[in-house]
Length: 364
Ligand code: ADE
Ligand code: ZN
Image (cartoon, rainbow, N blue to C red; front, side):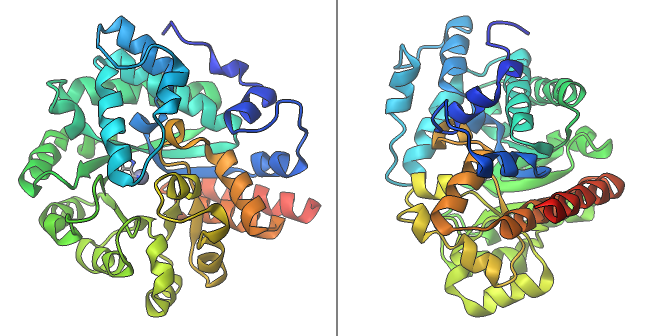
């Protein structure tokens, strides 16, 4: 493990810089947010590839990329749509070639998340995006698992791994990937499946069979829906894929009945506000439907999606959203509590962190 600055030196000042804060600023609201024990439930590991690491890996692995400085990479972070971002995201991950690259990526993310008060992380990866480049499934997965173990040891956070299918590829390809993961499902190293990539034109019914296979195997199921797509995509995902959580799901705000159903059943939404602004799913944070969903009783959580591409990790997402929507401390604590309840972490640890949130709240 070498070549990158040790993010344990991510002092408060570093953390604030990385989330777009003035280094000198003392910000009680940010301190409060960081103090809340949180679970991050919507995080694509490949989307945590910071420009500095991208350049270092490009050099180490002799992969040509059209950037020579971190700022060149950041200058490209200007998206008109989800697809614009995905083009950059898939190109960027081309520097990830060997297991140790995935291990370093994963460890760096966990260190960074822990600095924001993440006590549990359920992270996604996109194996098909790597096997398509002739990187072996085991090479990728073992590397990530090594990074998760190292990160757990170092930060004390717990983790789970979820394998996503790329929805712009076929269900046959998803099933092939599902079968490749069998040994990891059997011993719990991969706890579930997800569905990501281009939403429009790739509806949930395309993946009904592979999600049913996951259900028969007792795996957790999550899926992106209602990010760029309409409320009906969220409803169809609930009906056809039997998911435990919806990733994004913000379009549900346009359908009262659906919101009521989400609230009644308790299906969590893993919302990613800075991502939604960056990808133009909403015009601005002030227009974000998170508060309306939360106040309608939907189990809303806040997450960072692809933090290296969207300008903020989890505390930055909480902070900027709180500012834009005037979320008070009680709502922020509720969102943190929702993240723990919506997580697949062990019951005892979950109860203990919820007790900690209660204690923080009564002290405030
Ligand atoms: N893959 C990585 N980030 C994604 C997002 N925001 N939506 C769909 N697929 C993704
Ligand atoms: Zn996502």
